[in-house]
Length: 162
Ligand SMILES: [Zn+2]
Image (tube, rainbow, N blue to C red):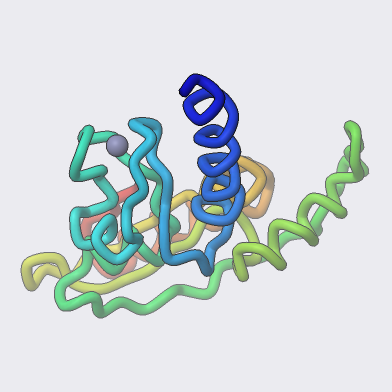
């Protein structure tokens, strides 16, 4: 029954693919090994596919929940410079890309800085979100990175960046 294998199965897979790993609210994720994974199970396994061992992307929030003691951390407010000083445009205006990324990620820019404890030691941690324009390194990301390092210097604690 080749038509089942060649037509029906790919159609079903494409349905799952569009609605699972692309949507933040979906309960299931797809993996490159073609398995469906319950997102909660994937998170409990540190975002590593239990079948093939492939590492899936983590948002900064997911990263921090895995990394900090008891999932306890505080997001630091970082300076937000002017959005688009170069008035940059490729196929879209950069300001439009920023607006969409902010809506999708609920972040002001690609890098998030947090403080908390790791094995009881105070640490400052930064994480870049690939879902924010591919982790775009603009002026705001640079400011956030510097702010995180300054927080570490001021508090004499380690700075860890993902
Ligand atoms: Zn897999």
